[in-house]
Length: 163
Image 1 (cartoon, rainbow, N blue to C red):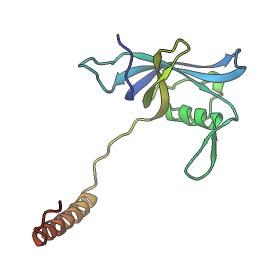
Image 2: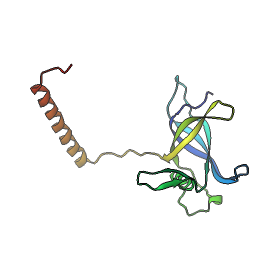
Image 3: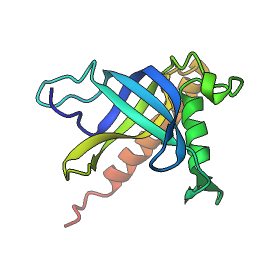
Image 4: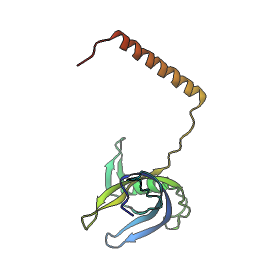
């Protein structure tokens, strides 16, 4: 099977555990995902493809969010675990039940050998679409019809072609 292309994929966790990286002397949470669905390339599907991810803990600031709050590795790992279904009640070394289906963003990153490999950039809860309530749909319909009527009236009044 070819490498997984960049994109957003629906995935399910098949293995997970707390681990320690002796070389970096850092704890991380290991996650293994099975791809359920996502983009296809050349009519090849990557359903069933597995991808591993290590979410490291640490106090290093990675970036600042929109509100100006610094985000650390700890913040990102906790948010990722919550997206996967962790409610914070279980100790990190005994989490069970990370079985939620999630959406993962996959990007290509160079490995030590110089070749590009798929990596998990972000993990978020699966987006569930809900039906629009009838009242809201009716209000939206009225707004769109008004915009369309105004646009058509403006087009009728302006017969010049801008070039």
